[in-house]
Image 1: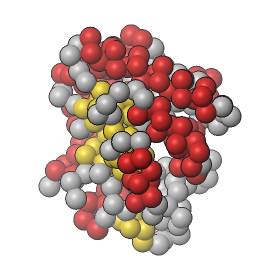
Image 2: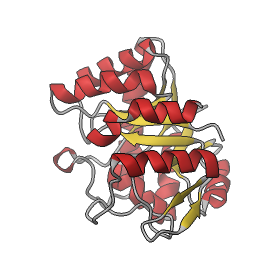
Image 3: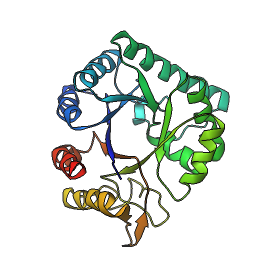
Image 4: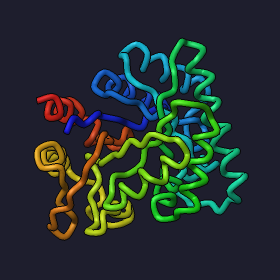
Length: 244
């Protein structure tokens, strides 16, 4: 299994995060770039895209619910038509800015509460897929690798979408395959446990859940969260593990 390393970037609220993005970009394969609805700004988007181009990193849109106040981590009930329009607005903005510097958008990965909600709600997931399919050809869809991945692949095929399945380097898993909620102790892995999880994913295609069970996962990509200082500090080690 050749895991591509991805990271959520362009989420700056201050200058420190911009510096962090500069450290991360040389180490990753794919950048999930914030579209401005949960963080960031047009200038941050432009600068993040330029960094991706400089380091030959594939670019994906990272849209969210319209929720800057809560960093996109609050669920928002929206009619499907409104959600589709909201996502297409974000995707189009990022695609247009990428085109300005001769970059092509490769995929879409929803952010935060929207990501979690769509994993448990098939109707919401269909709305997300429709928004991507209608946003142009050749856009893939990134979502979490779970025991339902084959079903998700079949769903994506009905919309003509290629699926990128991802696992997480720095998040702990429930026995069900869901991520442990951030509000729960142990949700964010320590540096040591994170590196252990990366090795296990690469060597055994599995993770160890919060209750100590082995959970098989077949993933195409591995996510490191750019707002996790432990993960950022270990990005070089994670890259090294995946490259050996």
